[in-house]
Length: 75
Image 1 (cartoon, rainbow, N blue to C red):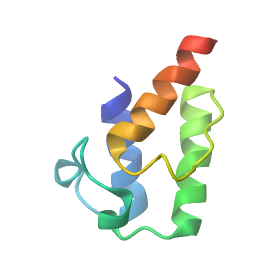
Image 2 (image 1 turned 45 degrees about the horizontal axis):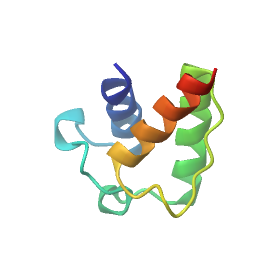
Image 3 (image 1 turned 60 degrees about the vertical axis):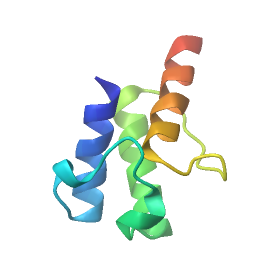
Image 4 (image 1 turned 135 degrees about the vertical axis):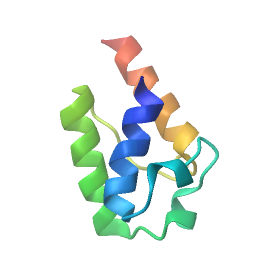
């Protein structure tokens, strides 16, 4: 499932336990910086074979999951 994979990738990037990350978790609360975000996006694009643009609308993990689902539905 998309959420579980995103949580796994985020936990690796943020250096925290996956159990600490929920759908409503905000990226800002994870303490990841812009370089971490770039690495995360690259990993997501490799994993799901979609293009994801990080923009102001992506605040929570759920926002990112919705964006990926939207891209996968277009394919």
